[in-house]
Length: 209
Image 1: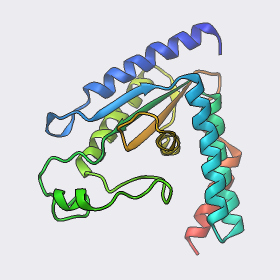
Image 2: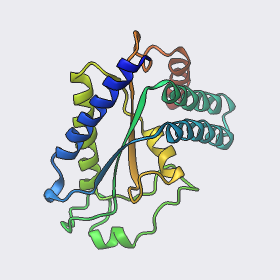
Image 3: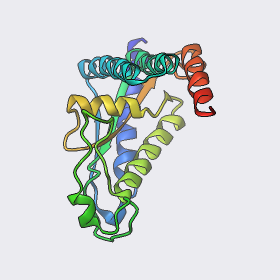
């Protein structure tokens, strides 16, 4: 990617940040955070994604499925490395509105807050989360991706990148993050990946057993 294209990506990433910031928030309360990862952070996230894929592979009893999951994570990690920029959008998912709506799986907000967090050492995410904060993140991410699309920037929403960022302690105090890698090349690097397609063919076949 040349200097002109890199500069264009940086401008559009900033416009995406504006779109994410101005996206509607539940109750008008904003707990969304947005950053453009530095090159060192981007490399660390890609390396951590590969590591997580290896860990999941070792935990699975089905060797073929394990290898497919590892391949899936490795494929996404490679595209993070190849991307011109990586945007991270996160939210403080344990903030509550006090509506006791039950969307989090508990009858009252106070019960959700008393429930111990899932440890990142045991799982990929550290819920439970307030459903409204999850929606706030979804709307912000969608608004940012829409801006990328309108400016012809190839992008992909990646929860895996967010999982890796959480493990690395990036974008604190957010506890739920989505990564949006951006690319400006002659061919969209996020689609038509034979390794990912093969991995998901195996994963889907396993689900149907």
